[in-house]
Length: 240
Image (cartoon, rainbow, N blue to C red; front, side):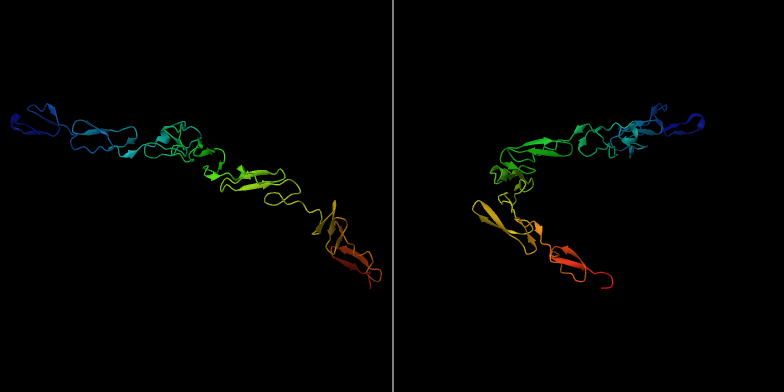
C-alpha cells in the first residue's frame, strides 16, 4: 500500500506500491486456481489459465470432451462417454478410441499355445493334443475312440470327446449296431440272418405290422370295428 500526502491528503492504492505507486501488486501468491492451472496477475485481480481438460473461474469444472468433439471423432463404433479428460469404450483406448487394447498382454493361454488378440477378447490357438478355451485340457480326440468312421469332436470346456454316429449306429463310441426289429422287438441272431421276436400286438419279419384286431370282426349286430394298436373300438348301429 502506498501513501501520498499531496495537498494535505493521504491517498491509498490497493493495487500498486512503490514511492510513486509505480509497482503493480502481485495478486497471485494466495490464488485459488486448481488442477494445475496457471495464475495470471492483473490489476487488483488475477485470472486462472486452465489446462485443456478443465474450465471455470478457478479451473474446477471438468470439460465435456464429448460435446467438443463434433462430429464424433470416436472410431471403431465407439460411443463417447465423458469422464475425467475423455471417455473410452470397451476394447479400445486412446483419445479417439483408435488403439485396440492388447488382451493377450497378460498371457492368458498356457505355454506352447498362441494367443490371438481381438477386440475386447482373445482366442487361444492350441498345440496338438491340447484343447479348451485356454488350451488347458488334453484333447480326448487325440486317441480317437469313435467307431464306424464316426467324427470325433472335443468339448472346448472339459476336453471330453463326442462321437457323431453315422445313421443306424448309436452309443458313446457308435459301436452299438442298429436293431433291425421295429416296435421294441428283440433280435435273435441266426446263421447268416436273424429273426425278430415281436411284441404281442405286432407281426411281420421285422415286427413292422400292427396286428389287425378287427380281422375276426369281434363287434356284434352289424357294428363297425375300428382297429387300434393293441385294441379296437366298436361303433354301434343306431338303436342297438
